[in-house]
Structures are given as C-alpha cells and as structure tokens.
Amino acid sequence: MTNQPEIRTALPGPKAKALIDRDKTVVSPSYTRGYPLVIERGWGAMVEDVDGNVFLDCAAGIAVNSTGHSHPDVVRAITEQAQKFLHMSGTDFYYEPQVRLAEELAAIAPMRGGVRSFFGNSGTEAIEACIKLSRHTTGRQNIIAFLGGFHGRSMGSLALTASKAIQRRGFGPLLPGVYHAPYPDTYRCPLGSTAESCADACVDYIEHELFTHLVSPDEVAAIVVEPIQGEGGYIVAPDGFLQRLRELTTRHGILLVVDEVQSGMGRSGKMFAVEFSGVEPDLVAIAKGIASGLPLGVTVARAGLMAWPPGAHASTFGGNPVSCAAALATIRLLRDGIVRNVVDVGAHMMAGLKALAGKHPLIGDVRGRGLMIGVELVRDRQTKERAIEERDAIVSACFARGLLVLGAGKNAIRFSPPLVLTREQADTAIAIFDQALTDVARSRR
Ligand SMILES: Cc1ncc(COP(=O)(O)O)c(C=O)c1O
Image (cartoon, helix red, strand yellow):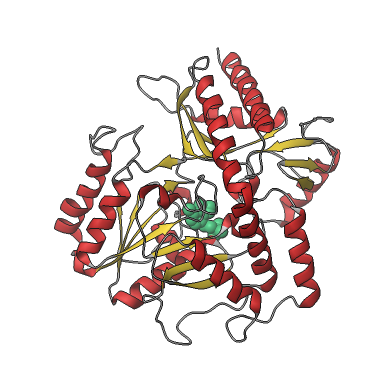
C-alpha cells in the first residue's frame, strides 16, 4: 500500500459522483462538504476513494483518526470486544472496558487528586455533561464561554458555541445565562490589545466588564474554554491566559472547564493541550481522537465534583464497550510512541509551513501545537484582509492534487492529520500545499 497520493481519475470520479448524486436526495443538506471525497478505505495517514484515487489525509475525519485509519491494534481490540458483546448499557450494568477506561483516564487526566468519568457518545454530549454538572454541583446557573469557540450543536453546547452565526441561526432561544468574552487571538488582538497584553485584556474583560455590568461572579457556575480554539481557526491561547483564568475562577468559586475535544488525546504534543500551561482544570471534555474513530465522549471531573446522585444524568449508549476497547488501545498507542511522533513531526511540519510564508504573501500566520497547525490566509499582510475565497480555492486545489485539508475559522486552513503522520508524509503535504498556493495566487493575478 502506497504512502504517496495518486490521482487517477477526474475528481470526483464516476463512482464517487454516482454516490454523491444519491446522497443529495436523501441526506441532510446541513452538512458542509467542501469537496467531493467518497472514501473506500484508509490506512495510516492515507485514504483511497471509491475510484482508486489515493489521498494524503491531513484532515483525519475532523481531527479524529488519532492512531491513523484502521490501526491494526485498534481493529483487533474492536473485533475481540465485538465478539464478546456489543452493548449492555454501562449506566444500568457493569463491564470491565468502561471501568478500565475510567482508570486509564484517571492516570492521564491533567489534574491531581482523583477524577471520575462520565461517558457519552460525542463531543457535544461531553460538553452537555460539563454544563449540567457545573450547574448541579455549584447551584449556580450562568456560564461564560468565548467568541470564536466551538463546543457542539445540541441546544446546551450550542449556546456556548460562538463560531459561525449560521450554526445558531434559526435555533433560538438557546440556553439562557451564557455570556461570551473575547478570546486572546494574538494575530488579531481583540479590545485594542497587543500580542503581549492580549491574554490580560481578555481576562480583564470578564472581570471588569462582564462581572461589573452583566453577571455577578457568585452566580457563575463555570468558564468553558478551548486551550486551542479548533473550529475557530486553530488559535493557541497565549501564555498567561489559562493561568489567569484559573486564578479568577478559583477566587470566585467558579469551575474551570477545558474543552479538549479537538486539542486532546495527544494532538498538541502533550496528552492534553492545557498541560502546556501547568493549569489544572476542574472538568475536561474529551471526544474525537479518544477512540480512533469510534463514537465516544467523556467528561472527566475532579472526583469531589462528580457527586450527583443516581438518575441525575446518564446515556443508553454512552461508554459503549466497543468504543471503550478502541479507546484503551488508542491510549496505549499514544503513550507508547505516537505522542512522541506528534512532537517530532509536528515541529518538522510547523517549520516547513512557516518556511512557505517566505514565498507566499497569502500566508498571514502559521500557528499551532504538535499536529494541530493552522495557516491563516490574508490578501494583505499589513491590513490582514481575510482571504476567504482564496482559502476555499486552496482547499480545493489541495484536494485536486491529492491532499485532504479542512478550513477552520473564516480564512484559515487546518492541518490535523492522523498522529502517525511521518516526516516524509509531512514533506509531501507541504509540497502539495506549496503548489496549491501557487495555483491559486496565479489564477487570481
Ligand atoms: C472543541 C470542540 N468541542 C466540541 C465539539 C463537538 O463535538 P461533536 O461534533 O463530536 O459533537 C467539537 C467538534 O468539532 C469541537 O471541536
């Protein structure tokens, strides 16, 4: 099986086109397909479509396939568990994979002193459980989240989500008592701040604007934050931001919830991105990469906080035994070398992408951690005018040349490959991206 992209047909090929035509009439039109990829199978960081075209995958099913496509250890764990039993509902009965996974999560959680885990099926459910537990345990109602943040699309998490207006349009009224503060984007500093003062300015906004004019801190249950904004454009919180949030929340008895749905499970180069700050949160939301592609969402909380009584919260499918088996195999692989690979290949890829900025004026900013890298595209480096159409054209040009990437935010491209990506594959991705930038710059002249 090849490790290089190979495009053999016009895209989409005949079989892909036929399937897309069928999809159009029967599948929800709310999905946001940027280009016509119809997958047949995958291995490592490679994907083959139904017409035999092979792509290098730097999207990983929206930052999910952490151990690569169909890693043999994960497939074995899934198969072995599937042969024993598929479901029993961990909310009403007991089974070992769920307990073992909770023990493993306790060992890797970014907080000391013991934790408990609640199991759901997705990122949005992990956030719903964070919202419910925060309200339940504090007896307070209000939540603070950040502009640009994405936390899911069910009604509670959607109230926190402030990424794109289309995601909320037509669905209100949403959960009341949610307030949004600016996120410290050091490339586009909010509130008239600079890259150096950005973190302080955003926390000051909560302390001096929200707490003064809108909500009393003693009525705030939680502050929910992504250590690296994902859908918002792969924006890394600068030094000091999470530390100041921790200090503020502790001072007012507010819970600090970190949403590691996208940044967690090794993608940043540490198991959880919050670890870069040294901050210990109260709750962590995990999903996406945890089970290499099987559905699983987990809310991990300090043990003392997760003290709700039987019946307070549960999910029929949450903590499915096959997903738990996949997660256990995934965590083992991450610990046994994949996170180290993220540090190595992530640094290599970051350097390569930064070097491209020297020859492509469209590149305004390259940022991220590990294999969570965003490239923001601008029409003018001085004015930072967003290159939105160019971004979309570059994503399509990458696809045409055999590289799968996704957009993030208004005008950024994210590189979120399977964490098993090799240096050689990173070089291939950079070379194709380079060509795609050239194609699009030339077509716009
Ligand atoms: C940071 C973050 N939180 C929550 C979610 C929601 O996860 P899901 O789509 O599994 O519900 C996402 C999805 O992209 C995310 O990136």
